[in-house]
Image (cartoon, rainbow, N blue to C red):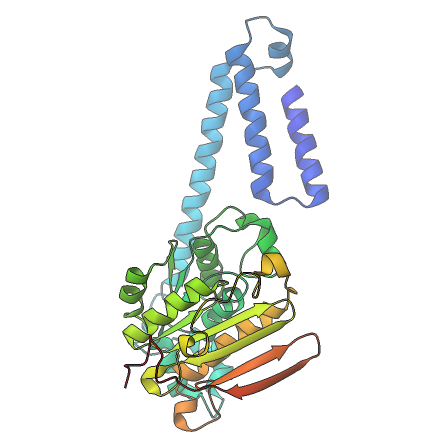
Length: 353
């Protein structure tokens, strides 16, 4: 009875402190492996073998049985998800580009907006957006893009979820620690809105790959945390002729703009032509950042994307951040907007007409 008692104690303790199921499963797996090892390593008649009980074949078969049950549960879960995604018997499948009744209900608050309406929501449904970074800024941007009904969302990030991310990167959960951020973010977006397509890309972005990848998307969002990547993303957007929404945060402050030299606005390199000297712009890991700040600025990124993709500003309603930069000071609760212009001598976009 030793092993069952230990297992019961583990489960009770885990329940009391609120441990996730994944951690409980790992603890029980370690306990099972220990019991099996006792029978494999210790000689016949050893006191610990007697205390553990059973036999090596018995413990091995128990492990196989549990694996079989878990595999069966996973298969059933996937089967239910597929069944839920299929239209009900007799229901007419929506035409390509049309909305199902569930989508009409979901996006009703968008559709009644005069500036967006049904045509704007249809544009969002057919839009393709790529987000670089599933961290502090990418998290809220991705969540709101998915909730808004953007048809295809790709997320590029080669990092894995860590415990220190969870103070601000709200798309990830404690149970996701150790998973690739792109996969974790994709899982959350699919759970939030099953009507869109999510493309996780768990790889490091380089100049060649960025230019090739960006060509297939309507809009790029950059939520990365270093100048080298921002400059790389900007150069690829200029080469592909794609608009870029880029934002940055540190401590209590944030900034955001829409860079688009193909339509008269400056590119990122017009404003920030080179990386700052070491120590002038420390990372969040060094300087710190208040957890809700990326939520505010990342949501602004998603909002600008909805305006851009839904044709809101193109119809004459409001104004985008194309050619303007918004500066937000969370500590004082203030923001201001400044005008930014292209540089004729910009080495990145100087030749763009």
